[in-house]
Image (tube, rainbow, N blue to C red; front, side, top):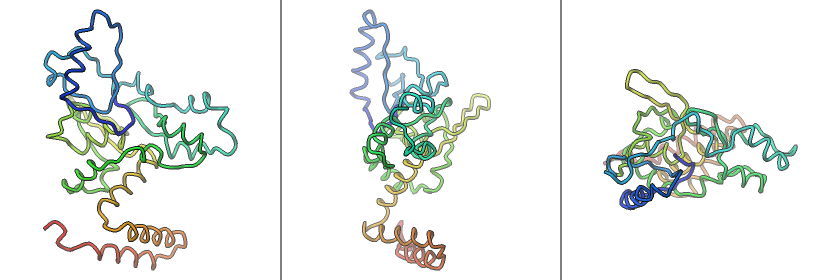
Length: 252
């Protein structure tokens, strides 16, 4: 089961962990394992080969998040007139595994406590490895919000042949927005689940590409002011200055 969270485990320890569980089979009635990445059963040899993967199963799609009904029912005592449910949904809902869309529990609990919209979950982890992978692979960043991936996104997790699509999905930065199957070919459409992840990840990518925090912040402020005032002349000047700062031989 894929959980919402930037946490990873590694194969050398996983095989030992699974082997212990299998040896204890006579004493264990039920085991539920959750984490970001699933490792191939083949790579485990006889360590544990009797798992049922429910990562992408409509029957269990809401097991690791809050549904809309759960939010409005279980947390009704904490939801008053000051809580805009439409904004809450825009910020923290949207995770989907071919079933109901769910909220990130970590975000909801902190939002109801602090009553302000922030990147609670995103700030809990640092996607430095992901940013490095995007840079070295020279991925076109705008395409992240409309990626197409195959079965590998929920398959084995091999750091030597790691794809950006699999990493973004397994760590919670992208979620499933569509599914198609033609014969044996399964295709998933991926996109940002909500505003928190979209804003947090794009800002992290920008920080990784732009040298100088003050310059980046100043440009962002100028763009926001220009858009708020419908000042397209100022917007053009800011964008021209930004792109002019990029070396023409960037990839030499």
